[in-house]
Length: 210
Image 1 (cartoon, rainbow, N blue to C red):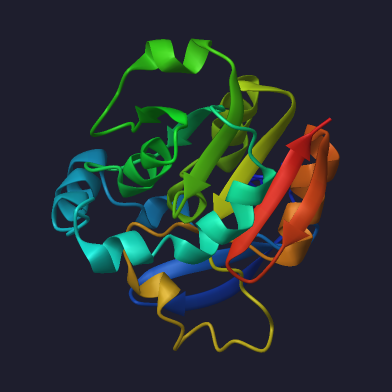
Image 2 (cartoon, rainbow, N blue to C red):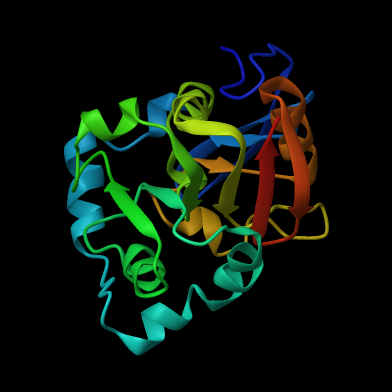
């Protein structure tokens, strides 16, 4: 096996918790679920159907407030945005449209429109997506192929730090969460993909495509 992000073969056993086996890459520090413990696509889809993500729900809309606070000041008026992995009901897309942005919604299960991935955007946003990726490297290459030079890649995913007890952390409890990122993981991503980090925090990560 190789790391799904940096393709290194330097993998170590990291944990076995919630009936799943986790490996860690010693080069980029990505933690990921061994492929033998992935849900089937059908089981994954059924799990996503249980999510109560209503774009009209004030609490769900508020979930994006911190992310919007970081990304909005960096966006030009009427930017073309791709909401990658938007889910069944794109609250983020609705919030951005209300502010005058042109948003395309893409999701593998709920809004699978491959033609959207053949266009170029001023910004590609992936909120609560990277932890779900079975194969991070191809998915990220796909996202960046849609991003103009100088455009923004906005990500929201919880970062793992060594101070966190992985076994009691809530993030691995979701069976659709397959990858757990660290600051080092995003440093490697930026270096490999030609990205300029504009801010990498414990929940929000923003990059500019060089």
